[in-house]
Length: 356
Image (cartoon, rainbow, N blue to C red):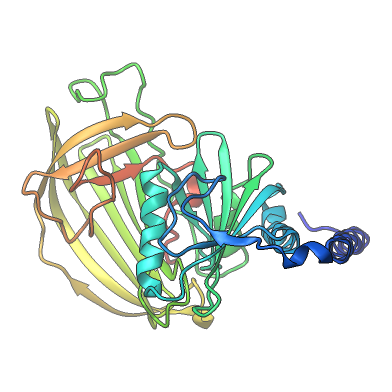
């Protein structure tokens, strides 16, 4: 829904008034500026995560208020505002890639679900239970600013995908069924429990390319298990530093034997696509290669992590080796050497496939 120009002018005026109020507060509090308000920090109050060594927290009124306004330029697109903000400066001594990975690992260890913005690599949403936090990590390797903003409500997270794909030719959502396991069934017994439906796994890509971004790209992997014992698998990799988009497509048969899932591919190909206008949008198919079949066997655990996260299908290769299909293991100390697939919130989270 588009806002009319009068509403936009009114909103712009309100934003200017808010910024003016911040500047006035700064002028009033100038005598306090000499006090030390940039201090070492080991943890975040908003997220509860442990921060990388050498992190400083900027508690100055102007810095926090500016971060609040800055983050709200994004959160308003999701229908929420920032109730409180934190401003951190990461150590200039450590390698930027290492800092990124350490921050992401801390999020996961604190049981935050990470939802990166696919159209802006510097932003992500964190979700845990009823809490929603917007994260900004500066793309400038010199400033290394990191902001956390606690949302005052529940953001419309489907907008992450809608903002990326809206109006872009060549993108479409596959009409696949969302998995709906029954909570009344035993979580470790698959005797009467169906895994039919679509399960999704998203991981961020953090290459060291000048140390500029927290989420430089992403890989989505997606299984759809059909009622007739067949499956469809897609994997899409989009990386800002890569010239092309990579799409893997596979189908075959699956079998459940107790808590074991056996995957037997019948067709597996990998495609290379150009980027339309350099963005996260399908251009032209450049090449297609047939992949060798990768028969795999997994030990399954189906676990409900509660509100905000929901059901996870945890797949542990019997070989204890990573598969080419699933890539690097998920990071989880409870189930190491495993892959975590979840039920998408809605179809907008699924891999957007090229229009035929």
